[in-house]
Image 1 (cartoon, rainbow, N blue to C red):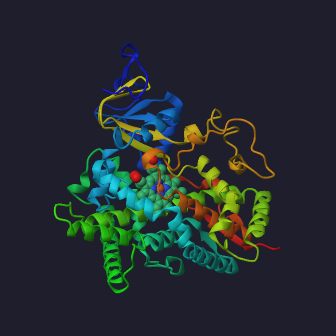
Image 2: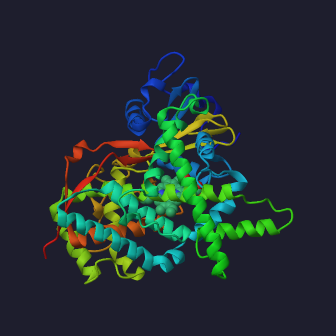
Image 3: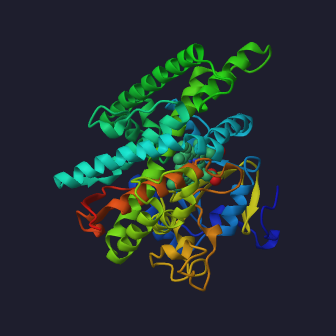
Amino acid sequence: MSTASTGSHATQRQVADLPCPRGLPLVGNLLQLSPSRLHLILERWAAELGTPYRFQVGSIPITIWTDTELIQQIMRERPHRYRRYQPIEAVLDEMGCNGLFSAEGAAWEPQRRLVMQALSIPTIKAFYPTLAEITGRLRSRWLRAAERGETVEMTDDLKRYTVDVTSALAFGEDPRTLERDHGVIQEHLERILPSVMGRINALFPYWRYFKLPADRKLDQSLAEVHRHVNAMMARARERMRDEPAETPRNLLEAMLVQQQQAHAQPGAAPITDAQIRANVLTILLAGEDTTADSIAWTLPYLAADKHLQTHLGAEAHRVLGDASVCPDYATLKELDLFEAICIEATRLRPVAAVHSFEPLEDVVLDGVALPKGTRMFFVARPAMVDAKNFVDPQRYDPWRWMRKGEHEPQSGPHDVRAYLQFGAGPRVCPGRHLATVEMRLALSMLMNEFEIEMAIDPAKINEISQFTMVPDTMPVRLAKRQR
Ligand code: HEM
């Protein structure tokens, strides 16, 4: 047994010794859990019981943690000592979606290298003109809505934006969903993550034996998405044949080249089309909601503060000049504030609200003996709204993230290690740079040209656990900014 943390044998606790909310015989706490409100329920129990605690799904205990140091340690000790929660891999595998996010052990590392390369800073720099062009399309969509006085459902528009960006960058194909009203791939993609959420928390995998209407809809969407990815793979192969390049032009080409190389090398493990498809789907899913909803969660804070909007408008205008979108990659570094407004929003509204793990061996953590395979959920928000880590923690204050400029950060704690929205350690989010570039681009374009107002009372917007934590709606009215 490794002692992943201190805790002598005499004082060691067992999982069964941890506090647990009162449940029912046989089912434990199952009936108190609603997948769409999971993070809120776990946060409430954490406040009532302290952490670590456990809850029971039938006879299975699930342990809950909130301490930043412990979670940093777990995240760093991957992939050798901890893995992601096993049901994630099982459920994603069943959906043909077991790519980099859920891969473990020897399968993880080569995939990681390819994806890191495809999302690296030089790749994104080279891709910048396309990124700016797609941001211009988002602008056109918003200009149209402002002229017509239409309310914009931001969760929808921003997902179109992130799908177009991710797909153009990683697969060399721009689906131009921003220019279309219906029949877009993103309508099918958005059925997948909520189902993953329900299934990984299910006590019994009923869908393997009978299908409810929602399962049949999911199957249709999965078939549609797989058809879309197959067609994209076929077109990529054609491009590689008709317009050969010395090095792969995107992630999909890199994966296809690796497949050819494995095929040509006697004894090498073959790479199947299903594996490539799974990674394409993983990147689409991982890059879409997370970024779109982080930007969406920023909007109510801007709408609530006219003074901040005026400042952001002037700042965007100063940096962008006559351009409507940040003109080049180098200028992005002047848009720190536009990243800060989004990072600060997700400190209070974390899109990655729950991270889940299992130890691959028996460990002792914080004096608790955890047998191999113990289920562990890390709930992200308590540490981010703890005055120990962030001064005046309930206040939306983007300036706390700014190191320079007229607004000096407040004195007091500012522990960036507690902001784990992108994870940490060897499996830290490889899309982080792309995501922050998208935040800077979309929010500076928005504030440069528009004033925004919420179309409903923001208190009526609900946080939904859908694997990521999403707003159920984000209706916004846009008005052209007067200068
Ligand atoms: C604001 C936006 C985003 C957030 C909050 C976010 C958050 C996360 C988190 C929390 C993880 C798990 C990290 C860990 O276990 O340590 C992760 C992993 C991952 N993310 Fe992101 N992400 C974002 C954007 C993106 C984008 C744009 C892409 C790709 C286009 C992407 C691709 C991935 C992949 C492939 C993984 C799995 C990495 C691995 O397991 O090795 N993410 N992300």
